[in-house]
Image (cartoon, rainbow, N blue to C red):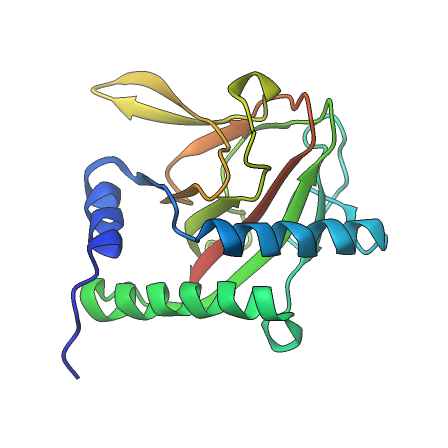
Amino acid sequence: MEIVENQVYEKIISDLVEQQYSIVEDFFSLTEVEELRNSLLSKYEEDNFKKAAIGNRTNEVVAKSVRGDFILWLNEAEAAASEKAFFKTINDFVHYLNRTCFMGILHKEFHYALYPEGTFYKRHLDTFQNDDRRKLSMVCYLNDQDWQPEYGGELVIYKNENGVEVPKTIYPFPGRMVIFESQLLEHEVKPVKTERLSITGWLKTR
């Protein structure tokens, strides 16, 4: 079946090839963002979230000095309507990557993330010594429409350009999606001055 070119996806692919990361505005509509935000907050209020850990699920340790967010893993099979729409778009994107770039993405994992005021996530790489399947990291911001840069919680990606480390600061504006190479780019979340909401996940090989 012939692939219909998707300009948004093509820009992401081009960005990843050129700079190992891509920033996409309005990857999801404002309505979709609002519905996902409401779902996140509802489940957080029901106390379904847990304190995030470092390491993967077979070797994880809660370390407040490293990260301070609370997370809830999403199960596609049991997803609410807003989450099903989210996964439909992600699956479409994965299918496009595999058909056009032969990336071999076979699995994915996503979770809601809530950073309370004063929390952060220190500089790290999204891969593990005992598991290197993560290929692409994805973060979709679900903050309120009035989000301001002074609220903190910006993502900083550290790139090496001609032997010089250059930090790239990305603000968590609602609807913004950031996609980057999991095994190449170290990054951190700066201290949050008001609640910061997102869906974070990984596209995985093998």
